Image 1 (cartoon, one colour):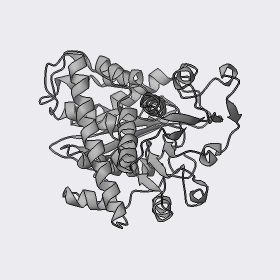
Image 2 (cartoon, one colour; image 1 turned 45 degrees about the vertical axis):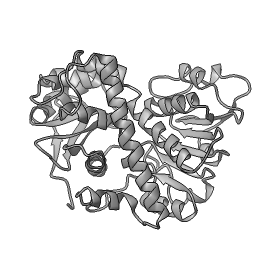
Image 3 (cartoon, one colour; image 1 turned 60 degrees about the vertical axis):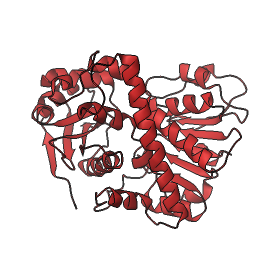
Length: 380
């Protein structure tokens, strides 16, 4: 398992953008992954992300392979977003209809996904074997928008319980997009204190605890906080890695890949580091953090809620014909159980001295870790 099963460039027509789909593996005729749209996304990066998706799905025992798609607008081009997504849908149509589900990822929204599906003439709910829904696909995911952040919060809460922690903890969240906001909201609801949040413009901090709901209301859909409306007591740090130096017990990484590399490790103050995003730590940084006494919960175990819930529906594992509230509750319980169990296993293996707990977990599932996934460039 040294490379992807399929890697193909897409012709997006007259759009000033390039596109790719990478399929790492196929199981029972199915593969799945998100579609990210960033200026710097590359086919090599997608190969690493598709491999990670193979691992995520195997770890939650879903019979689906891993894939990833990417769209890179041409540098300096003014891209008409709707046209790009329609062009992507038309080009990816044979793969979608052939069993490669391509959902949302960094830089794309549910509305983007719907445009692509319409252009492809693709309706996932009509695929044979899929869980029968009482609502359409878009309504389900409007209701489940927080599911990945929910899974990350489950991981944090489980790790804190396992460590014997009984008091509210100070939490720093790097990234305040859909995942970061959901993590912060769920942890605050469980009595923990979110003391810092970072977005692309810098870090906002209050050691007394940030007002998470109010902060979320001041945040745009791309995860940027409106500084002009922050409470006076909030400290505003400029661009940079102030989030790395915040005095916190828990650090949730929910933004760029390689956010913590080897050079950053000595600055990490939180004893619990949680990879809420894809490839949030480099592989050497994970090892160094563990050697320094930090607990690290890796992305393929933690950042799985959206993929797991989607996979349950695609594979027909979720019960059919449930009203939306009951289906949502079933999916959340399913995600919660698998995230919590895998986090427990990672911690047990780490405590016993395992150099690579994820590889051991994959081996126990009969899935080889394969070649190391390519690291994303620093700062992405």
